[in-house]
Every structure is written in C-alpha cells, then in structure tokens.
Length: 216
Image (spheres, rainbow, N blue to C red):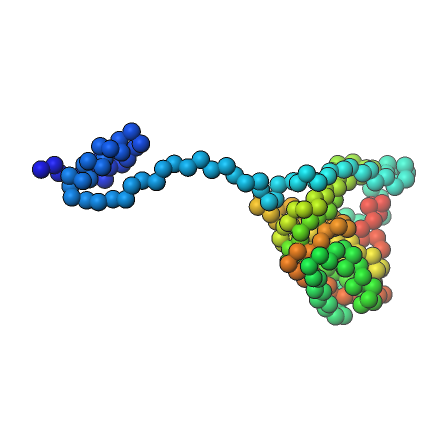
C-alpha cells in the first residue's frame, strides 16, 4: 500500500502538469478533494478613478506686475508673524447631492454674514472635480488646472480661510489611485453629501495680506 504523501510532496506535485498523478496519489491514500478550479484570464474593467475622456489639464500664468514679480524679499516683512484671535462662533454647512461645493460655500458665507473665518474641516464625496495647484518655483507664478467632469472621489479634508468675505479654500480628495488636491474651483459637485465647518472670526481682524504673494 502506498504511503500518504506529505505536505512537501503535495506542494511539488500541485502543478498543472502533475494533476493526474496527484489525483492518483490522493485517491490511493483514501482521500477525496474537490477538483482545482481552472485558471481564468480576467480583463480589468476601466478604473473608476482613471482620467475620463473629458479630463482636461491647462496651465495659466498668474503675473502681478513686473516690479512685484521681480522684487526681492523685504526685511520689513518678517518670515513669519502671528495674528491672535478667538472664534466667535462655529458654523457647520451641509451640502446635498449635485450642489456645487465652491458656489455653495460662497453663498453660505454671504448668507451667514461671515467676513473672516478659518475653514476647519470637510468631509463627504464628490462626483466630479476641478482644482488647481502651483506648477513652478519662481515668479510669475503658474497654475495648472485639473478638471474631470465624471470622476468620483472622497473628500478627505477641506481647509483654508474666508478673508474679507472672499473664500480661499483648498480640498484634498482620495480615489483608488491615491490622494490629490489643490485649490477648490467651480464645477466640483457633491455626490453623497458634503460637510464643511467654519470657525468665524471677528470682522475687525485684518487678514487682507495673509494670502498676498506680493507681501514678501
């Protein structure tokens, strides 16, 4: 009577060319196994997060003036300075399916009478997006705009400021290929829902230069 094959023997024999021999060995040992599934060739479906046929990428130069774009840093502007303030209230905004995220945020800021604020958090998902980010290291600055009208993504975070009633918002999104983000632009529409939280500051605080690239 043939001895039952051990694990190492089974491993060596478990190849397509040895399946008949393996079956005979196991049968002789009084064992029963289900047949091995046949290998299946799988063709991946298009990735939901891959750029669609409507994806566009464009670059835009953002010059100020020749003087401001070429001036050196001034010793009168410190490398970092602090603005101290307390939140006067907290506003939580909820966006529904297909709402334009930036348009809704701007409208809520106006409706709520918010002049200065910190964008503290954001969550939810989008069904398409448009963002921009800087794309060079010297002035004049250059922005690259990425727009995909059919690409879904999760909202990982939203942050930024309301400066004198003007919204300066950044967004981080995540899809299957990873996280990405930049400056929030129009035509970023909500999918399931979106939530953005604002910490409202006093109207008396001067934030006018915090995002001014010529203030250096």
